[in-house]
Length: 117
Image 1 (spheres, rainbow, N blue to C red):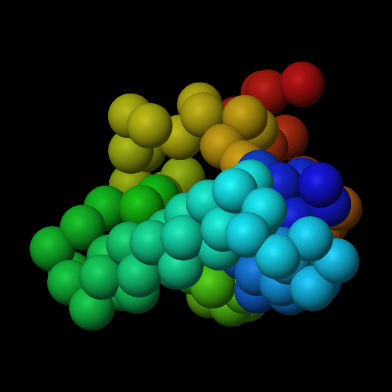
Image 2: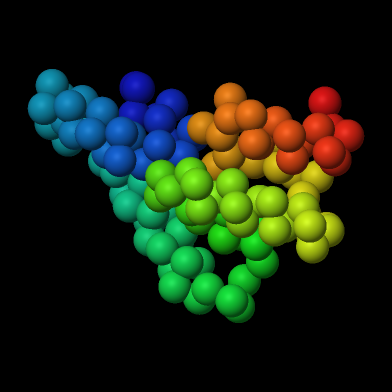
């Protein structure tokens, strides 16, 4: 199901839309229902992180911004995470929330400054 792929890429709105299409074709499809539930839960988690603001790391804020489609803020938070030398930064290349940022030159610059492949 395409919704599951979108979910793994943290494209939650698209995951929900695709899962709803699947439900139109096959009402009650358990995988589609689960996809919607998880996308809604993860979106709420990211919004909760953003609501906490200063009480969370720049890296977590970057994940949350990316997760809700706010790429500019995500990149600024990643830059701050890099500048603060947050210990979690080596995960920047493998964190699924940042998949949509991989093609952005600013993301590649941050990764390059860290010496990551």
